[in-house]
Image 1 (tube, rainbow, N blue to C red):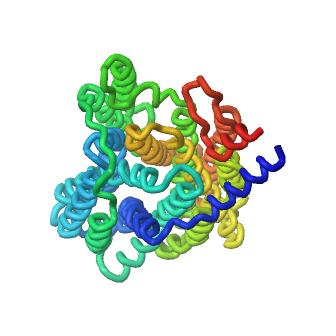
Image 2 (spheres, rainbow, N blue to C red):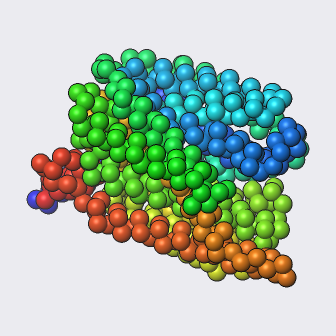
Image 3 (tube, helix red, strand yellow):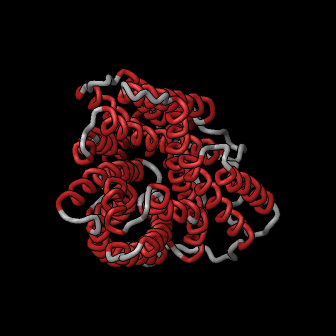
Length: 497
């Protein structure tokens, strides 16, 4: 028994230290650069919105929010569809097509001369981003086998996703101040062209495909349902939860997604087989992903408001204020594979959510006059815990999924990311709005009170994710339960004992 355990440990250690190889690293850089570009596309515009309003005469915040919403809607709404399409037609061609679409519409957005033109271009970017997002994870999981190499790849991917958001915030301020808001779009054209060359040259042309009929009714119900859900959530921040403008699409989303589940149980070739949706790792792993993305995204927005409305920092300085979060995200991404190799994916998911939740809770101590050290430590904890959670939740959702469904599993993971981000921002913004009592004599104190309420909810929800991970993802499901182990290392340990 002792020799078997030692042999297994040595084998695991050997696999953990195994490198990705030159081609593996180039492939990883290409796929991660595409994900970085999509993350950058989302955040780089946020700081530039006032300049866009002045340049194109949008006419106020209610119209200006469509610059963001037009991108988010198709990105989230089409992920599940494109994830399944990639399983049928191939991930490489859909990934390349997505890059072409993002690059082309980024050029249109950068040259836009009217609000409608920019909004249409942003929607086009969203469609291309959905293609890239749905296939990028599938390409990673197909290129790197389950285990330490995949964990390392997912660690780099998770770090760059978070870093893309932070860099986008900083770059948006720098570009808008030094050049022109149009360069926030035109820089994506340059990046897209470079990544496109890498994708054509490096990605495997002989990938396995699984020909089958596309579930058209399921595709329509899922896509329209997700579009209605994200639209309703995106509208809440402006009109409130009780407004028909938000309630009608949200109710429609519940009905459509419920009908989608009913249809999937009856058709011969479902878009998302219920056997996949019912997998413990997919179902509960997806929930933890929705929590970590939603609360991290929402908390980041609240921190931006704290820096600008309470501390009165400029947009550029505010972007720099998130630097610790970005650095911590990179460190977590580089260490995630080693951590998972030592204690397993479920444990790292718990630790990541715990660090993110405790870091968010500590933000309740941020004072009205500012504390750079506390801000640095808490944002670093947010970024570090978030990336550990992202790597482990994606590893959980894609682990053990049959090859013909890896695109679907990746699409589900990306959907959790996009929907989670939309939900988190909307919910926390609503909490802050309800808790803020205007005080003309002390506007900063009033704003801080409201923000603390939002941070408290974010911390509670994130720590609730810890409970979910402990209860439902702590150990592999036994044979016959319809699930494979969520963590290969844990599976080997069970076998060895």
